[in-house]
Image (tube, rainbow, N blue to C red; front, side, top):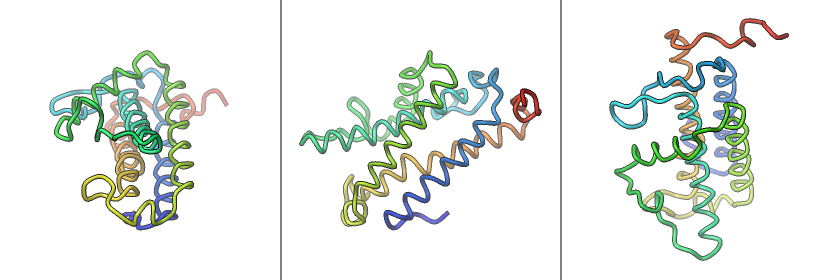
Length: 180
């Protein structure tokens, strides 16, 4: 999928990549959701699917926070207070901890909620708001939203699909045809 250049393309990218991610998550057996068998965001680390979902929730929440702070006339501390852009592995670890203790269903529901909040945010903005000027360094607001929604959704879907193909997780009961 090409890099979105306008509001409609951004919304399409967000919706399409999220739908694909959701289908991939549906294939993860419950018992494997919390198994740290994926390559982590920090070099040499391992993470679970739950950690990956927490990472996505964390970035979606940050984008929303940036916009809430801006709307309130407050400074935005990119990427997050206490973190620099060269500390994204540490920030990923923070996200894992922020949502630790939630069930798979709770994490999925929270991800859906944050995704829908981002969709509403983008819908509330014009093409000019999204792509008319730099917003964070050289990046436009639309590109920053894409960097923290559509792109990582697509990356996460790919990670999960590859993980399932390698047999690191058995297929879910739903895929086996059980419980129908």
